Amino acid sequence: MATAAPLERTRSPIDPIDVSLPELYSEDRWQEPFRKLRAEAPIQWVPESSFGPYWSVSTYKPIVQIEALPKIFSSSWQYGGIAISGSVGEPIENEIKMPMFIAMDPPQHTAQRRTIAPSFGPSEVAAMKAEVRTRTAEVLDSLPIGQAFDWVEKVSIELTTGMLATLFDFPWEERHKLTYWSDMGGDVELIKDPANIAIRNAALMEMGAAFGALWQQKVANPGSDLISVMLRSDAMNHMSEEEFMGNLILLIVGGNDTTRNSMSSFAYGLSQFPEERAKLEADASLIPNAVQELIRWQTPLSHMRRTVEVDTEIDGHHMKKGDKVVMWYLSANRDESVFEDGEAIRVTRENARRHLSFGYGIHRCVGARVAELQLCTLLEEMGKRRLRANVIGEPERVPACFVHGYKSLQVELSHY
Image 1: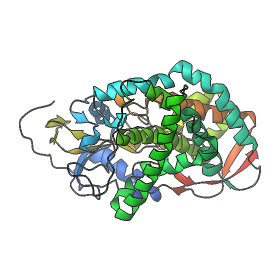
Image 2: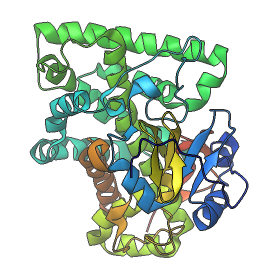
Image 3: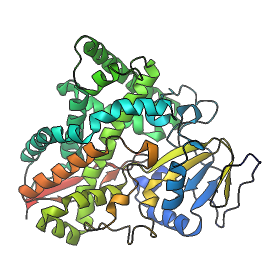
Image 4: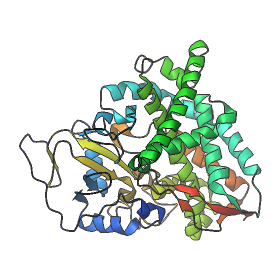
C-alpha cells in the first residue's frame, strides 16, 4: 500500500543478481539466475548494474500487482520510460528522448491508445486474414526443401516486415528498412557507447524523415493505414517530432520483434521438444493454444520497467519514489506456481494464455491479435504443406536483456 512516510529498502536474503547482463541472453544461460531469484528473492534490490540501480521483480503475482497500479508505478518517458536502459533524472548525453503512448501515463496514454486500438480490433484483424494467409503461403512456397537457410531472415523477418509495411502503407520495396529501424530502436545496449548512440540516432532520424514524408502524403491522400488514423485523431495529429518517432518505434518494435521472435521460437523451440511437435503436426486443432504456449515460452520482450511515483511497499519490500522497477516477464512466464514445468513447451498447456508476454493491465499490447493471427497462420500453412523446420545449428541470439530473440537460425525443411 502507498504511504507518505519515508521507507528503508529491505535487505535481500541472497547477494544481488544482476540479470540485465547481455551475455546471459546471448549465451542462453538466463534460466538458472532467474530460477534462483524466484525461489529465494523474487523481489530484490540490485544496487549496481550498467543501467544503474533497480528493483528486480521475477515472479508472476507481484508483476501483476505492479502493472495494476499505474498511479504508483509510472511508465512515463519523463522518468525513463519502459526499458531498463531509460535514464532517471538527467538524460544520457546525446540520447534522443522519444515519448510514445506505452511510455505515458493516463490521461495522455488513454487518449493515444484509444486512437490506435480500433485498428487492431476483432473485425479489423479478421479482415486481414486473407492477405496474411496469401503472404504466408507465398513465403513458404519460395523456400527450398532439404537445403540450409536462415529461418529468421527468410521467414520471420519477411512475414513481419510485410505486415508492418501493409499496416503503415509503407513503400513495399523499402520494407526491410523497417527491420533495421526496429533493431536500432529496441536495442537497449546501444546507449552504453557514445559511438553506438550516434549510429542509433542516425537510424532514428532516417526513420523520422521517411515517415515524415509519408505523413505529408497521407495529409493529401488519407487512407485506412496507421498514419492516416493518427492524422484523423485529435490526440495524435499535433505530435512533436520526438513523439511521432517514439510512437513509430513503439508500433514497429511491437509489431516486428515480438512476432518475429515468436515465429523463430516455433522453429527452434519445437525442435527442442519433438514429442510436442509431433502432437501439433498430428492435430491442427492444437494450433491456437500452441501459439499461446510458444509466445509464453519465448517471451519476446524480456522485461518492462516502471518508476515509483510515491514511496510504497510490495510484499514487504519498501520502494522509494524515483526507484527503477524492472518486471521480468521472461521469468514470470516460468513461475512454477503458475506454469508447471514452465521451462518446457507443452502445446496442450491449459493455462498457456495466462502468459505475460503481452503485458498486463492498461499497457497490454494493443497489437496482440495481429501477432496471434500471423503466428496461427504460419502454423496452419506449415501444417497444410506437412512442412517441418529442422534446426541444424544453435541460433545466434540477441545480446540484450530487452528484446529476447534470435539474430539467425539455420534450418532445413522436410516433409513429415
